[in-house]
Image 1 (spheres, protein in one colour):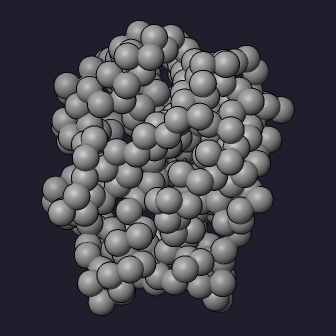
Image 2 (cartoon, protein in one colour):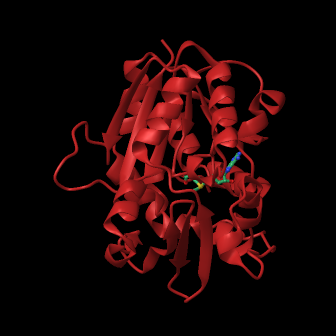
Length: 279
Ligand code: SAM
């Protein structure tokens, strides 16, 4: 039976269908490769992603932030470039936006599609596409592109970052907007590994903590109540570096928010959200 987002507290009831397991090889700290994400979002980790980021709690903590930002700009069509398991795509469909859901991981897209059906009976328009070749696989122009959930951090070379941003830029209408978020890596890098803190998702037993940090790698460990552990290798983007890339690719105005607040100061936010306007 179809559910609404209000019913999400009970969790995901779709059948797990993902069997491949994560592989990092003998030297996990040497895995600094953009292409590797397709080997990370697989198997049990895909099944567990919705436990990691509980949809109902996420819905409450984000509130209307993204919806308000989009509506304030008269946005109608949105490309969710990092669909993952579909949280934002479903949210946007519920709010009446025309939404296309892209991701480079077929396993995440499969989960997103079944989540769409389960939570509101939405048929997601899913497209398997890597950001670096987005224009090849996704058609049309959009009023907005979103790339959320600390996804951009998966690109390991500046060339890939510039390529992805250029593809986003090209797929936006002349007055389009790109919304991209990232973890606050500045504080993790600058305050040192000793001050690393553990992030508790879903407020309970699921944790994410830095396993290794250097200027070229942020490796996080995710631990679940059944004691299973998964990892993600990411590039630790500095906030001003991301802003500079956005400017250099052509965005005219970039506003950066911390944890959904316009001003951030004494207490460092865990996340930054960049809103980049094309004109
Ligand atoms: N936005 C979702 C959320 O907030 O729950 C998913 C976030 S998940 C951290 C990152 C997603 O980005 C994954 O589903 C992964 O497959 C996708 N991704 C990473 N690098 C990509 C790339 N180069 N092209 C397309 N998708 C990519």
